[in-house]
Length: 87
Image (cartoon, rainbow, N blue to C red; front, side, top):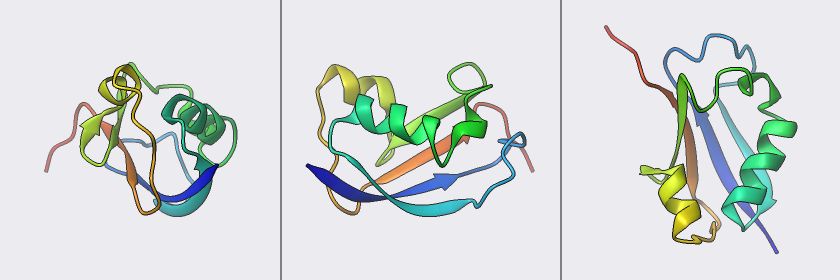
C-alpha cells in the first residue's frame, strides 16, 4: 500500500538544489519509503544523510520509527534537517 506524504528539506542541506518541499507517494513501510525517496526525488541528499543531516517523521527520529515498525499514513511529514544551523 502507498501513502502520500510531504517531504520538507530544511536548513544547511546545501548539497541539495531541488525543491524544499514536495508531495510524494511512498510505501507505508518507513525503511522502504526512505530508501525509495533517497533513490529518487531526494537522491542528492545521500552524500551527507545520517552523518550531517537527519530525518524526522512527524517530528520523531527516523531510527525510532524504524525500531517501532511505524507505518506512514497519508499526510505525514518527513523532514530532512541539519545537525548544525544557526541564525
